[in-house]
Length: 414
Image (cartoon, rainbow, N blue to C red):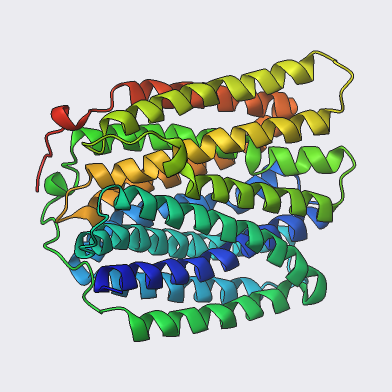
């Protein structure tokens, strides 16, 4: 195994461990506080700082990774997540509702920083590792590595949802957080012992103008990413779990469905290279695929809302579950293509900065979707969430229409 492949395997394994605990955390917080009687909007509010913190963490994290090395930023992200778990475990049931919400939001903000520092470092490491891996089958390797990394990560998040419910049931809220902090400490130790400390260190941008000087492909893809992930979270974060629970599903059923959906979504992401036709230049067919799957996604939430409103006699929860399955397949393929395209567009010397900028847009989309998920569901139920998703996906499709092909791509800097 050459050095590039070895580093890719280590980073992927570390991110699996991180994602497992991150998925468990989301289910812990959602179920614990919903059980305490928090409203849909309040539940969404608990995750707002978690998502908002990621915007700055991604952007600055990319610059820091270029300046100080990817390994250092990966270790900082893991250590920050452990800190967030310990802060959240200090929550006392004797505190007032307002004090509890403030404490949880702050702890979630710490975990949001951790997630996006870790994500930016890990995704940037793929570009570096792929460049270092001089295997004979280099054609298409970047797409395969990105797809496998992204897909397996989301499958682990699904298992994390299972784990969160299981830990909450058997260890309680505080005990679950302590157990996850201990497990992540082992992952952190493995990263420090295994990865080169200066991995990915490059000449970082010296001015804001240089830092924001992205090429056209990176800028347009960032716009599309804001809309794409806002469209997912606008109904997935609060709308779907609360709607299913209100339809008579138990916590276990809701948690299991969300987990299975996420695992299936991850598996489809990993298999995306087999679904998307490849092109010799690495962009022509891939950009067309991004446009096609974005258009398909526009149709799905609109169709679900129409069927729900038609009073067809079918159970609304079954309609939503089937529709979400179709949405998940198309979203997984499109998300995997996007994750590949950002590395294809990224400058080789400052890939971490380009990736950080892109995932800052990703975090902005999640923040917007999370906020709207609580607001729209409280205002107009699942219909409002679906319409909001459809409008965001239309914006994503329009942005992908302007994405450049290889011939039109002129990097702003090397």
